[in-house]
Image (cartoon, rainbow, N blue to C red; front, side, top):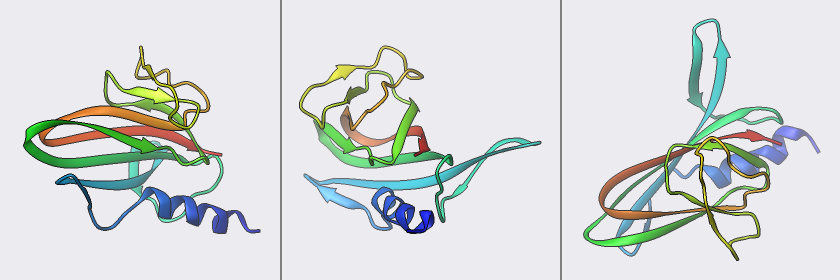
Length: 133
């Protein structure tokens, strides 16, 4: 099987063109490929992913102002998370059965399968960097 065919499914799992609605929360995911060049680091919309590519996934949401919510996101098995943008994030390495709080946003445990965080009403954003296996 050609590697880009395998990673096409990964890209489809990561990116969604329309917002997802649950409990009145609109959640949208955007996936970018990170490139390093003479001008520094840039990100471009991911069109196809290959092993070794670095990606930045950005999750954005709008939630009703009248509540506090817990969001859980599965991490595609082909990604190895490196860092997150949010303190207080919890991670699972066993499919969401147990959780632990990240002490350092740049020290995500190997084998992370899920991330979990609290949302308050309004708009928010979370991003994470990962490498494609």
